[in-house]
Amino acid sequence: MYTEEIALGCDIGGTHITCALINLREKKQVESTFVREHIDAGADADSIIAAWASCMRKSMEGKLPPAYIGIAMPGPFDYEKGISLIKGQDKYEQLYGLNVKELLACELQVPASKIHFNNDAACYLKGEIFAGAAQGHHHVVGLTLGTGLGSSSAKDGVVKDENLWQAPFKESIAEEYLSSRWFTTIYNERVGEKVSGVKDLVERFGDNADVSPIFEEFGRHLGEFVVRYFGNQNPDVLVLGGNIAKAAEYFLATTRKVLLDKGMSLDVKLASLGEQSAMFGAVNLI
Image 1 (cartoon, rainbow, N blue to C red):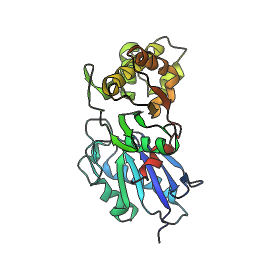
Image 2: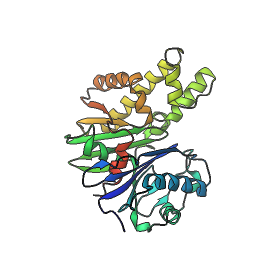
Image 3: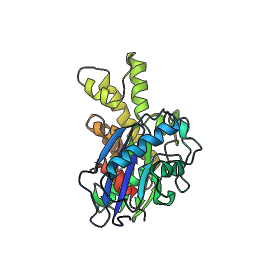
Image 4: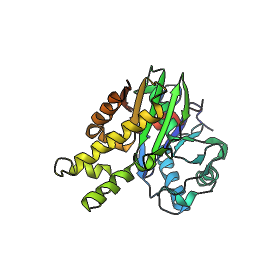
């Protein structure tokens, strides 16, 4: 027996997974079903699948089985077939070429037909359009900034994955300049110390003169990227999400200045649903 008006929404990131049951009719999260857990993205395939399934079970514990499971997944990924194509990104390497849908279905003991994957950036934007910062906007661009770079856009309600993580940018590709990896690499190069990520740098802000210029440089990169790839599309609003966006107060002013200097009039907002945006988008199968 399945609960037709309830679906399980999941957001898989490079270091974590979040899950919650979503009431499709009322368009809200089912109380006390939100679960967030750390994931070792460098583990073997069996361990990764088991960890994902464990989080999903905790979210569904004590409830009737949901109608289906919607999963927001980073790319590259064959979303229809459920096959991982992620390689060379320091995450989920051991899943490359495997049918993740079938492996997860087996682990959860549910039909594979009840598991649906979609691009995480597209899911995040769907959620924000549905109930977040992008409500009421005609043409929206969404960027998720974290261990990787997610990019999506929506026009007249149609959401698509822009897949710009590997787009040419500066001396490499966009993700090399717009991800957590850039922060840790630059700080190590300039200061000679290793940091765990952006959160670690935020904690050093104000006490370390090397940190502020790094955030400002990131802000310039972000503005230049938006101008280059979306400047001719004239979007109404840019919505930023992901863990790096939590530190927006340290770089967003620089990004806005770059946009204005380049003649791009664009409202920039932070995703308002937090962890929930991708999960809401993941269960929206339309």
